[in-house]
Image (cartoon, rainbow, N blue to C red; front, side, top):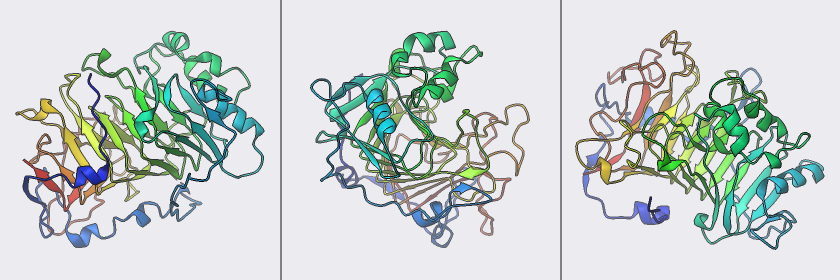
Amino acid sequence: MTRRPYLGMSTLLCMPLVLQGCAAASSTGTATRPLLTAQEAAPYTVENYFAQGGLSDRPRGPWRPAAITLENINTPWRVAPSGAPFTRIQPAIDAAIAQHQGAERLYIRIEPGVYVGTVYIPDDAPPITIFGAGNGPEAVRIEFAIDSQFSPATYRQTVNAEDYPPGSPAYYQYALCAGKTTSQIGTNCAAVFWSQSHDFQLVNLTIANSLLDTVDGGTHQGVALRTDGDRVQLKNMRLLGRQDTLYLNVSNRRNDALTDRIHRVYVQDSYIEGDVDYVFGRANAVFDRVHFHTVSSRKSPEAYVLAPNTLPDNPYGFLVKNSRFTTDEGYKGTFKARLGRAWDQGAGKTGYLPGNTANGQVLIVDSVIDGGYDRLSPWGAAATTARPFNGNAQPSRQLNDVNHNRLWEWNTRWQR
């Protein structure tokens, strides 16, 4: 596949637009494309998405993400293809954690180059910032091909096990996946980069699950980046994959999904590429000036960008603002991609149970959507249960009604 050049968001959002029109602020839309009014959209702010985190019965908050400044950072933890203290990323992380004392942030600098292999960060790591030293995110590329369909034996043979010796900080993450007794490792073990730590930051680099088009259009979850922690920041990143590129998860050290807490993620000035459910998870996440690009190269029979599994009593899931949704040539005809769908996680046997099953929440605001997406029906039936999309377009409505979906737009601009 030919790699597309990365365009900064200032370029993307200033490109001339041929518009079909803007979502009317006074309209509630239709059952297939519900719209918020300006009054309804007003509470959906970055501050409210990040107001509380941690355990639901003992919440922390609010979180106000600070600007990430790297100009004067001088760190001994440097990785380069040659000539630096470390030539691989995982050993640098392990050494930094082992020698760290106190609660101050660790900085790990990655020099330009391609780094092949998985990278894991444990849940008890101190605050860590990993940043690329190049002029843009393309200069540093972390890549590996890993598929949810791998058997545990294939995982053990394929993954860079030498970076996870017993006793090392991230050994338990490797052991959880290598020791599985199921026939497949599943999505939770199919990440190139997996961080369980809080206050984690990634800046100015590319993470690619290089499985890409080496597999067919069927079920092949291949995660580029998975985060499990609270107060995570991703800035100026390129995340490349196909199905399940970015996984914003909430889980514990045993890899169990957690429903008793909220974790928060802030994504800025980044590019995310995929085809099916390629931004998904339970975190409260804000995407600001993000370019979502949907590709058709794998010939998947369906395409969705967002797939949140927000808890039903949480009014905030994914907020997308000042962003852009684009598609490749495969969606320029009658076949269209969709903006997303709910992920009814864990309800495969029971079906959707209102008030108990996750009910994904999304608001897309002040963003541009190209003509490769289905404007009349931009949201699909839920993942796991195939629950038909049921938007609430009634003038008098409760936005968190568990009998309706919570996938919304406000002030979006659609291109032809």
